[in-house]
Length: 69
Ligand SMILES: [Zn+2]
View 1 (tube, rainbow, N blue to C red):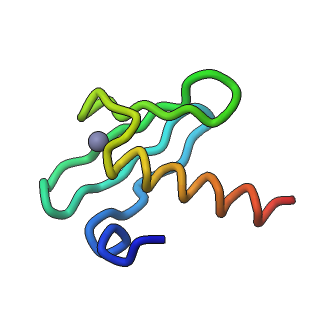
View 2: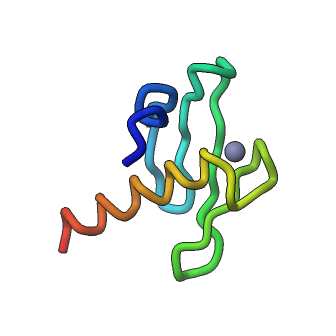
C-alpha cells in the first residue's frame, strides 16, 4: 500500500457494509461504503469511488480478504 496514504489515513473501524477512516490531513472521519456485492466502494465525503479514501479502503479489504482465505 502507498506509504503516504498509510501515514495520512488510519482505520477507525471496519463494519459489515462500511469502513470508517480518519484522515489526519483533513482532521475528519471519512466513511467509505461498500456498495453492491463485488467490491465497489463509495466515499461519502468525496462522493467518489476513485478518491484516496476509497483506494485506501480497497487496500484494507484486499488485505483482509487475503488474510482470511
Ligand atoms: Zn474520499
